[in-house]
Length: 198
Image 1 (tube, rainbow, N blue to C red):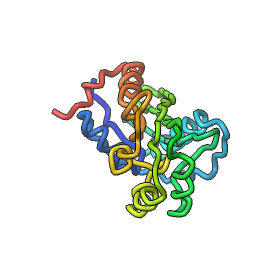
Image 2 (image 1 turned 30 degrees about the horizontal axis):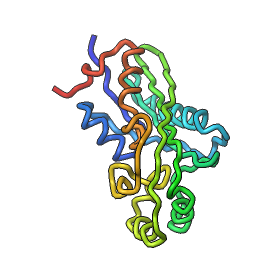
Image 3 (image 1 turned 45 degrees about the horizontal axis):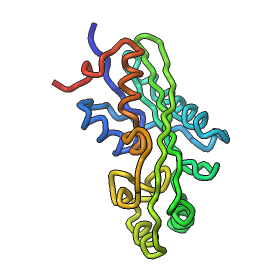
Image 4 (image 1 turned 90 degrees about the vertical axis):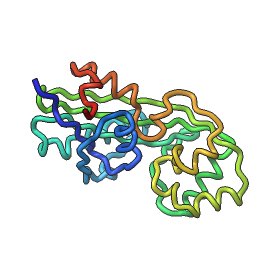
Protein backbone atom coordinates (compact mmCIF):
# COMPACT_ATOMS: atom_id res chain seq x y z
CA UNK A 1 0.00 0.00 0.00
CA UNK A 2 1.31 3.45 -0.86
CA UNK A 3 2.26 5.88 1.88
CA UNK A 4 -0.13 8.84 2.27
CA UNK A 5 1.03 12.40 1.83
CA UNK A 6 2.06 14.11 5.07
CA UNK A 7 0.11 17.37 5.42
CA UNK A 8 1.03 20.06 7.95
CA UNK A 9 -1.98 22.22 8.87
CA UNK A 10 0.16 25.05 10.21
CA UNK A 11 1.66 28.32 9.03
CA UNK A 12 4.64 27.86 11.38
CA UNK A 13 7.97 27.91 9.51
CA UNK A 14 9.61 26.41 12.63
CA UNK A 15 7.34 23.33 12.52
CA UNK A 16 7.98 22.90 8.82
CA UNK A 17 11.76 23.16 9.35
CA UNK A 18 11.62 20.58 12.16
CA UNK A 19 9.87 18.10 9.88
CA UNK A 20 12.27 18.81 7.01
CA UNK A 21 15.28 18.33 9.29
CA UNK A 22 13.80 14.97 10.32
CA UNK A 23 13.47 13.94 6.66
CA UNK A 24 9.75 14.66 6.17
CA UNK A 25 8.80 17.17 3.46
CA UNK A 26 5.24 18.14 4.38
CA UNK A 27 2.55 19.55 2.16
CA UNK A 28 1.73 22.80 3.98
CA UNK A 29 -1.94 23.73 4.11
CA UNK A 30 -2.54 26.59 6.52
CA UNK A 31 -5.62 26.21 8.69
CA UNK A 32 -7.74 29.34 8.98
CA UNK A 33 -9.42 28.11 12.16
CA UNK A 34 -10.39 30.99 14.47
CA UNK A 35 -8.67 30.14 17.76
CA UNK A 36 -10.71 32.69 19.71
CA UNK A 37 -13.71 30.32 19.46
CA UNK A 38 -12.09 28.03 22.03
CA UNK A 39 -11.81 29.22 25.62
CA UNK A 40 -10.50 26.57 27.99
CA UNK A 41 -8.53 27.19 31.18
CA UNK A 42 -6.59 23.91 31.16
CA UNK A 43 -3.49 24.40 28.98
CA UNK A 44 -3.19 20.73 27.99
CA UNK A 45 -6.84 20.48 27.03
CA UNK A 46 -6.72 23.80 25.15
CA UNK A 47 -3.78 22.89 22.89
CA UNK A 48 -5.24 19.47 22.08
CA UNK A 49 -8.62 20.90 21.08
CA UNK A 50 -6.98 23.65 18.98
CA UNK A 51 -4.61 21.18 17.28
CA UNK A 52 -7.53 18.93 16.36
CA UNK A 53 -9.67 21.82 15.08
CA UNK A 54 -6.77 23.04 12.89
CA UNK A 55 -6.29 19.56 11.40
CA UNK A 56 -10.05 19.08 10.88
CA UNK A 57 -10.33 22.43 9.07
CA UNK A 58 -8.15 21.22 6.19
CA UNK A 59 -8.72 17.45 6.26
CA UNK A 60 -11.53 17.41 3.67
CA UNK A 61 -9.01 18.66 1.07
CA UNK A 62 -6.85 15.54 1.57
CA UNK A 63 -9.19 12.51 1.57
CA UNK A 64 -6.38 9.92 1.33
CA UNK A 65 -3.73 11.56 3.43
CA UNK A 66 -2.33 12.17 6.89
CA UNK A 67 -2.93 15.60 8.43
CA UNK A 68 -1.01 17.01 11.41
CA UNK A 69 -2.39 19.95 13.39
CA UNK A 70 -0.42 21.55 16.24
CA UNK A 71 -0.88 24.30 18.77
CA UNK A 72 1.42 25.60 21.51
CA UNK A 73 1.00 27.77 24.60
CA UNK A 74 3.24 28.66 27.51
CA UNK A 75 1.88 28.49 31.06
CA UNK A 76 3.65 30.64 33.67
CA UNK A 77 2.33 30.78 37.24
CA UNK A 78 -0.97 29.30 36.06
CA UNK A 79 -1.44 31.92 33.32
CA UNK A 80 -1.76 30.66 29.73
CA UNK A 81 0.07 32.65 27.05
CA UNK A 82 -0.14 32.37 23.27
CA UNK A 83 1.46 34.89 20.91
CA UNK A 84 1.71 38.40 22.40
CA UNK A 85 -0.56 41.01 20.80
CA UNK A 86 2.07 43.76 20.64
CA UNK A 87 5.60 44.74 21.78
CA UNK A 88 4.32 46.20 25.06
CA UNK A 89 2.65 42.92 26.00
CA UNK A 90 5.82 41.03 25.01
CA UNK A 91 7.90 43.22 27.35
CA UNK A 92 5.46 42.74 30.22
CA UNK A 93 5.57 38.98 29.70
CA UNK A 94 9.35 38.86 29.73
CA UNK A 95 9.34 40.84 33.00
CA UNK A 96 7.33 37.94 34.47
CA UNK A 97 9.23 35.12 32.71
CA UNK A 98 12.82 36.25 33.27
CA UNK A 99 14.49 34.35 36.11
CA UNK A 100 11.55 31.91 36.32
CA UNK A 101 10.25 28.89 34.41
CA UNK A 102 7.25 28.12 32.27
CA UNK A 103 5.64 24.95 30.94
CA UNK A 104 5.38 24.78 27.17
CA UNK A 105 2.38 22.72 26.04
CA UNK A 106 2.06 21.54 22.46
CA UNK A 107 -1.04 19.73 21.23
CA UNK A 108 -0.59 17.28 18.34
CA UNK A 109 -3.55 16.00 16.31
CA UNK A 110 -2.93 13.41 13.60
CA UNK A 111 -5.84 12.58 11.30
CA UNK A 112 -5.44 9.54 9.06
CA UNK A 113 -8.18 10.00 6.46
CA UNK A 114 -7.36 6.71 4.75
CA UNK A 115 -7.85 4.69 7.93
CA UNK A 116 -10.48 7.04 9.38
CA UNK A 117 -8.51 7.40 12.63
CA UNK A 118 -7.72 10.41 14.80
CA UNK A 119 -5.00 10.61 17.47
CA UNK A 120 -4.67 13.62 19.78
CA UNK A 121 -1.83 13.99 22.31
CA UNK A 122 -0.08 16.66 24.33
CA UNK A 123 3.61 17.07 25.17
CA UNK A 124 4.82 19.31 28.01
CA UNK A 125 8.34 20.72 28.41
CA UNK A 126 9.56 22.89 31.27
CA UNK A 127 11.64 25.89 30.16
CA UNK A 128 13.85 27.82 32.58
CA UNK A 129 14.47 31.45 31.63
CA UNK A 130 17.61 33.44 32.44
CA UNK A 131 17.46 36.59 34.55
CA UNK A 132 17.35 39.54 32.13
CA UNK A 133 17.90 43.27 32.38
CA UNK A 134 15.27 45.71 31.11
CA UNK A 135 17.72 46.61 28.35
CA UNK A 136 18.02 42.98 27.20
CA UNK A 137 14.24 42.54 27.26
CA UNK A 138 13.71 45.72 25.19
CA UNK A 139 16.42 44.69 22.72
CA UNK A 140 14.96 41.22 22.29
CA UNK A 141 11.40 42.50 21.81
CA UNK A 142 12.73 45.06 19.28
CA UNK A 143 13.85 42.15 17.05
CA UNK A 144 10.10 41.28 16.66
CA UNK A 145 10.96 37.58 17.12
CA UNK A 146 8.87 37.24 20.33
CA UNK A 147 5.77 38.56 18.54
CA UNK A 148 5.69 35.53 16.24
CA UNK A 149 5.90 32.84 18.92
CA UNK A 150 3.66 31.21 21.49
CA UNK A 151 5.38 31.88 24.77
CA UNK A 152 7.08 35.02 23.45
CA UNK A 153 10.41 33.41 22.51
CA UNK A 154 11.99 31.28 19.80
CA UNK A 155 14.36 28.66 21.19
CA UNK A 156 15.94 28.20 17.75
CA UNK A 157 16.47 31.95 17.36
CA UNK A 158 17.77 34.80 19.50
CA UNK A 159 15.47 33.68 22.30
CA UNK A 160 17.69 30.64 22.81
CA UNK A 161 20.22 32.97 24.46
CA UNK A 162 17.77 33.59 27.29
CA UNK A 163 16.88 29.97 28.04
CA UNK A 164 18.96 28.51 30.88
CA UNK A 165 17.81 24.90 30.55
CA UNK A 166 15.03 22.67 29.32
CA UNK A 167 13.42 19.79 31.16
CA UNK A 168 11.83 17.46 28.61
CA UNK A 169 11.50 17.33 24.82
CA UNK A 170 13.62 19.97 23.06
CA UNK A 171 11.76 19.99 19.72
CA UNK A 172 8.43 20.40 21.56
CA UNK A 173 9.56 23.91 22.57
CA UNK A 174 10.07 24.75 18.88
CA UNK A 175 6.49 23.69 18.17
CA UNK A 176 6.41 19.96 17.49
CA UNK A 177 7.62 16.98 19.54
CA UNK A 178 9.44 14.70 17.11
CA UNK A 179 9.51 11.75 19.58
CA UNK A 180 5.76 12.08 20.16
CA UNK A 181 5.11 12.32 16.41
CA UNK A 182 7.16 9.15 15.84
CA UNK A 183 5.09 7.34 18.48
CA UNK A 184 1.80 8.60 17.04
CA UNK A 185 2.79 7.41 13.56
CA UNK A 186 3.69 4.02 15.05
CA UNK A 187 0.29 3.87 16.79
CA UNK A 188 -1.38 4.45 13.41
CA UNK A 189 0.61 1.57 11.89
CA UNK A 190 3.34 3.54 10.09
CA UNK A 191 7.09 3.70 10.45
CA UNK A 192 8.40 7.26 10.58
CA UNK A 193 11.03 6.30 7.97
CA UNK A 194 8.18 5.62 5.50
CA UNK A 195 7.84 9.40 5.20
CA UNK A 196 11.49 10.13 4.49
CA UNK A 197 12.16 11.70 1.12
CA UNK A 198 14.14 9.33 -1.08
